[in-house]
Image (cartoon, rainbow, N blue to C red; front, side):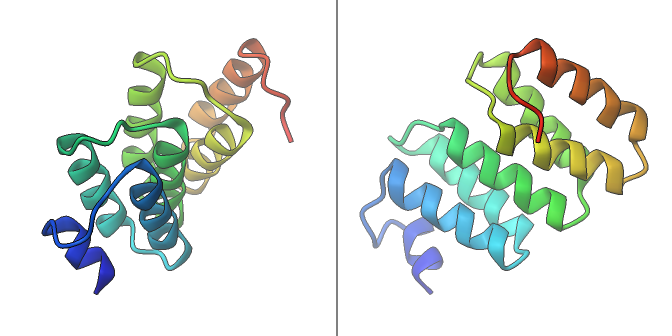
Length: 119
């Protein structure tokens, strides 16, 4: 209910409320809702950050939507936002689960080049 009120402007939103809502969607496997919230966040005054994108990537990973996870990861990289271990791990896991082990391996190499310590 709160998520619906957020997207319809009945609850004041900022980067913290959006990130928390996207993270909650990730925890319950609601990848579509996480992407809707990310879109709403992009259209609002809130600035999308690494935490929000990471949560959306993780939601896509849990929803077996590796293509979407990879697309969001590319958005993060193209925007020159800082990647972290959580971002890389969720994207790598999504690719691996989707049968894209080659992409997963490329991401591991990219992770090392980005000076992010692999888990």
